[in-house]
Length: 245
Ligand code: MN
Image (cartoon, rainbow, N blue to C red; front, side, top):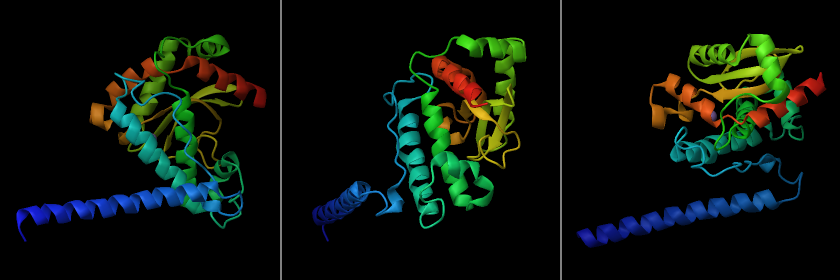
């Protein structure tokens, strides 16, 4: 085989592969279009990111955001749908699935948590964020932790102290604000969480959330992350949590 036909073969192989992917995408779309109940495997869907992939630059880079949303979050959605297919949780809300984490298959717990946590995470960030807590949340943070700086230090220590993959949270728990962390894709809404409560703020400290830009420097990622926090959204989460109690 000469070089040219070898390249030609390589190219046609690529085209076949590409068409296969297109088929898979189209097939997935047609599954999504089926009426509810016909296929449970496409129940949950990836929500669109509320801003552009490069909107959180320079603190979180575009490539990280794009992979995080289109690959990682998408995989949690797909695997959650697979995990609950044919089970009693197939027609339950995400909140109900999460709340029953101790009695669902581990794949449903991990991927249900992954879907919930990432949807939450995108919404407590925004471009040109940062600054200081606002509204009633600002008062609650001051009265609970003494100051915003004290709270940030506690939250930082919680996020740094989480060994391996997981999340650090500010939660409303029994009418108190509490800082806690969870392993893997667990969260404080799960019945098996060590500290239970309603998440107000949370940071993803899986390496996939920061490694491309920060490598092993989780501390720098956490410090820079305060610049993209959407305090209006966090205050809204706090007010909603207060009303649920
Ligand atoms: Mn993540």
